[in-house]
Length: 422
Ligand code: AMP
Ligand code: MG
Image 1 (tube, rainbow, N blue to C red):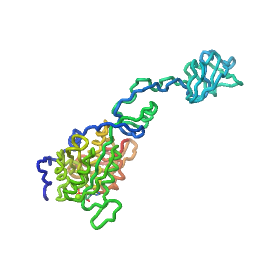
Image 2: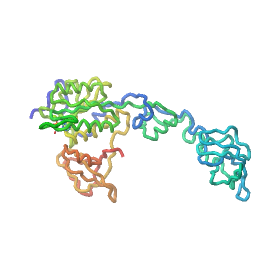
Image 3: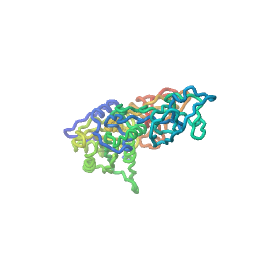
Image 4: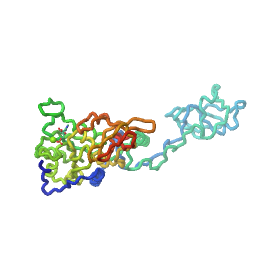
C-alpha cells in the first residue's frame, strides 16, 4: 500500500498519539471568537461577552405578594377576634396601578398581587384572613410589619453584578436580562463551520443511487452535531476524490471559523485530504490517534480565515467514526471558540450489564445504552460496533471508554461519556 501523500515542506508526525495528547494539541490552537450584540432570545445557550450589573432595584418598589389589604401594621397591634382592628378602605390598587396618597392612620387599601404598596403602608393581610363590612375591613389579629410584602431590591440592588462575562446563558439568565431590560446582549460569536464530504461514491439528497453509490450522510450528521455544539454549519458539498476538487471546495470555506471534512484521510491512494490541506498551506498537528473508532484523523491550521489561523479537521469517513471523532475533538474546539468554559461531556461511572469487550490495542469508545439498576446505572452495548453501523449510534446514550485489549465483565465498573449534556 502506498504511504500517505507527500506534503512537500509540511511535516506531520505519523506516531500514534493518545486522545488526550490530540485534544491538547487541538485546544492549544483554538481561541475564543470575538463578540457581537444580538436580540435577547438569540443569546440562549451562548456565552455572555460582557458583565451585566443591575441598573435598578428589582423589584423597583415594595409590592404585595398576595391579594388582600395593605395596612399600617401598627394599626393592627393587639387586634383579636373579640376586639378586632377596623380600618376604613380608602382605595384600591391593582397590579399596574398606583395609589395617589400615603396611607393614613386607621386606613387600609384594597391591594392585589404585584401592586405597589401605598406609601406609609408596611404590610398586607390576605383577603381570606379578613371580613369586610361595607367600607371597613375587620382584622382579628395583628399583622406583622413586612408581612406579604416583597421589599424593594429583594432580588437585585442597583449596581450588583448579576451575571459575569463568560457565563453561559440559559432560560433563567435570559429572564434575568429581560427583567433588567438588557437588550441587545453582547455574546461571543457563533463559530461558522464549513463541512465538506469527500468521496466518488457519495450522492447527495435527494438522489437516485447508481451502482456502487451511497447517500452522503456525514454532511447531515456533522451539520446536526455542529448545530448542537452551538455553531452554524455551512455545507461545502461533496468533493470527488481528486486533489483539485478537494482543494477547491475547501478553499470555498476559507472565510469560515473552522473547517471539517470527512473521509479520504486514511492511507489509500484515493485519500487526498491531507495533501489538499497541504496545498492550502496547512500546518498539520496530528494524524493518528490511538482510538477506535476513528484512528486516522487530521487536525491542521490553515493561513487565513477570520482568525490568525483557520483550524481544519479531516475526520474519518465511516459514519460512526466521523460522529465519534467530532464528539471527542471538534465539539470541544467549537465550544471553546464560542466562549464556553466547560468543554467535556459528562462522564458517569456505570456497571457493565453484559460483557463489554474491546479487541485490539486501541482505546475503545463503545456505544452503550444506560439503564437504571438497583445500585446506580448500568451500561449495555447497543449492538454491533462496526464503524459504519449508525443504528447502534442511534441507540446509544453514551460511549463506554475501554482501554485496549480489555474485557469488562458483567458487574465491573466502566466509565461512560454521555452523548448529551445532562
Ligand atoms: P474513506 O475514509 O474515504 O475510506 O471512507 C470510509 C468509509 O466511509 C467508506 O465506506 C465510505 O463510503 C464511507 N463514507 C465516506 N464519506 C461518507 C459520507 N459522507 N456519508 C456516508 N458514508 C461515507
Ligand atoms: Mg473515500
